Length: 160
Image (cartoon, rainbow, N blue to C red; front, side, top):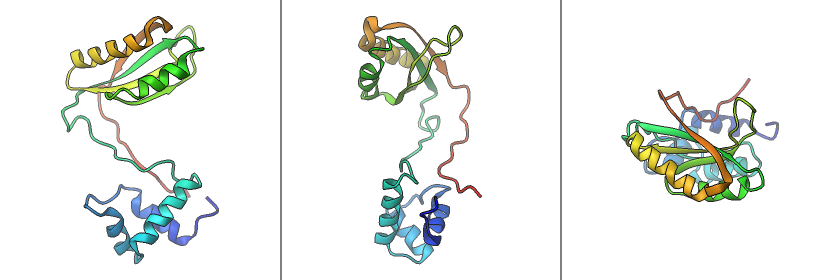
């Protein structure tokens, strides 16, 4: 992060607890830091472009929204097809994120993960069934790992 100046550090510090919940969050940050909204947005975009910030996004509290059956579906997919099928699974409207991970046989045969959020376990199971239909015979086995509690989610943090 050597290419960040003092203003960038102040900007990151102002955002690390989350953006203000206002219609114009960048304007609120700009006012707090004595900058213009255009400068705040330009600096945020520059940090995105050079990889200092990976993404800016919303982190909803699924439980507060009524989605209490949050399950990480895990799949043992043929390696030759996991990338192609993972892209298709990631585009399903009920999948919040999907990614490939290494297997750890014999304890962990799964290489494709897809998170689903549902109002109940029956709905989560129905979503898993839809994923299974896309994967078809490329999938050897699967499971759903349900969340038992919500962990504290945090955004960008400055490290000393």
